[in-house]
Image (tube, rainbow, N blue to C red; front, side):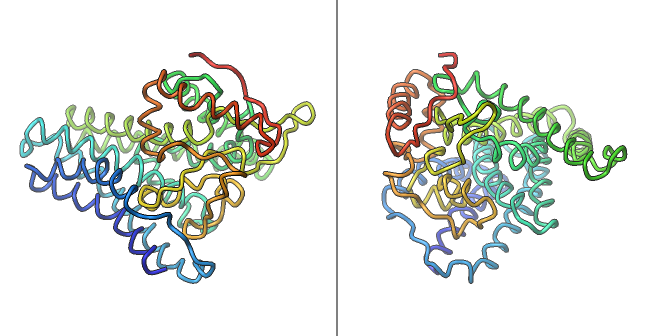
Length: 360
C-alpha cells in the first residue's frame, strides 16, 4: 500500500503546503495554491490509473489515522491563519482573493472530507475532532445531521441532503442546510430524551455547535476586526457550499423504492453516484467511492471499494468537475437527468424511482 499511502499524503498535504506558502510569501505562490486544487487535480486524474487498495489495507490503517489527525489539526490552525493574513496588509487584493479561493477549495474538499471521516470513527476523541473541524466552518450541525439523518434516510423524501431529480443546486442548498439543521436536532432530541429523560438538554450537542460558532465569530472579530469577520464568513460559506455540492452530486435523482407507507428498500449501491478517478479520490479520502461508504459507514477510507459500474451508477466526470458543472443548472440537467432516469429504470437501479420533480 506504499504507493497508495504516498498518494493520500501528497494529494492532501501538497495543496496545503502551497496554500501556506501563498499566505506567507504571496506572489506566484497564491496562484500555485489555486492550481494545486484545480488544474493539477484535473491533469493527475487523467494521468494516474484507478487506485487499487490491497485486502490488507486495514493493517496500515493506523498510519492513515495519523494523517486524519494531522489534517484536522491543520484545518483548525489554518482558519485563524487565514483570518490574520486576509485581514492584514501584507497581501495585495489579488493575492488575498486567490488565497481565499484556494482555502475554500482546500477546506471544502479536503478539510470537510477529513472531518466527515472522523465523525464516523467509533473513538470519541476522533469523532469530536471531526466535530471541531465542522464547528470551525460554522457547520457543526452536520456532525449530527449526516450520520443520524442522511445515512438513515438517504435517497428518500425524509433526507434533506438528497437532491430531487430536476432540482437545481441553488434551490437545493438552502433546503438541505436548514433541513439538515432541523432534522439533525430532532434526531438528537429523540435519542437524548430516551437516554436522559428530562435532563436531555444538558447533553444537547447543538449547544456546542451554536456556542462554538459564536465563540469562533467572537475570536475572529478580536483578531481581524470587521474585515476579518467578513473574510471568515466568506470562507465558511464557500467551504459549506463545497460539501453541499458533494452531497448534491453524489445522490442526485436517485431514490429507494417505498415498499410500504413510510418504509423504504434498504440502502444499496444504486443509491449513490461514484467516481473512479484516483487523484481526486485520494485528495478527498475516497469520498467518491460513495456507495461503499453508505454500505459500511464505519469503514475507514483506505478500505473503501469502488463498486462495479453495472451495480452502482458512475458520474461522467470526476467529483470536483461535476461539482463545478452543478453550478450551471442547464448543463448539469443535460448531463445528469437522462443518466438518472436511465439508471432508475434499469434492473441495476433496484426498481427505484426519483424522489420528486424539483424546480428547474
